[in-house]
Image 1 (cartoon, rainbow, N blue to C red):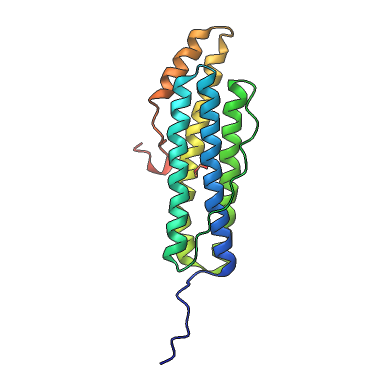
Image 2: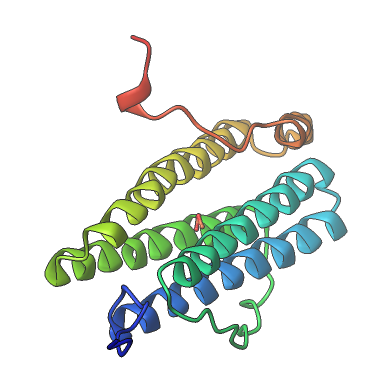
Length: 184
Ligand code: OFO
């Protein structure tokens, strides 16, 4: 009997691209962890808590890629994670840094969707839809934080505003409602 067939149901280049994204998610987890440490040491305990929780979420994303690659007969390869960017200079640049991280990651997710479509790899295309939705949520979440920061900054020098913002973030959910799921 001819058993010379492969169990692998993703292309080599798709395997490589998914592995790259798996590592990018690990990098995101490290970035949030580093920003959490920065926030903590700058007395923004609530924001630190929010970033620490989000770091866990990013790690879960890494695992989703890992499991998917293996489930499709590929091999997940854990690579080196580059050091996080330099510490931000203040809270505003910290929040803008997070925002940029999310926008960059969305572009990486879209590139994988494009690749899946080009290859007619509908399983991967379907798998990636979860991440497309997740990025919509995460962009909304961090944009909400930017709005809160802008509001708190209106009355310059009023530390009470920043204190409330920080307290608010401590228990802020990690999920944001996205338009297509709005009850309105
Ligand atoms: Fe992994 O979700 Fe944001 O980046």
